[in-house]
Image (tube, rainbow, N blue to C red):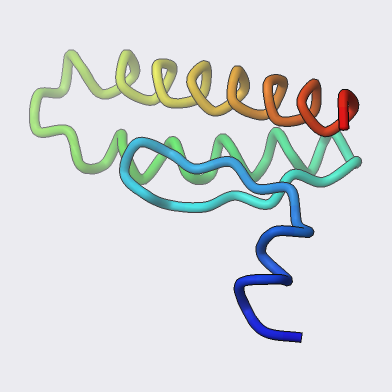
Length: 76
């Protein structure tokens, strides 16, 4: 099986930075993956007052994308 076909079968969400996160049925693991990636955005923010805001923004963005991806998959 080629990479393109295997990527199409996996349920992925893509962050605005291009990072891909695999959607898994374990909610705790999904939360850990989102939080871990959001921390990379927080570390990239130079303004200390904006770090937590950026982390929360990315966490919310990815959570929304996960829900949309699951809803689309369920509709297929």
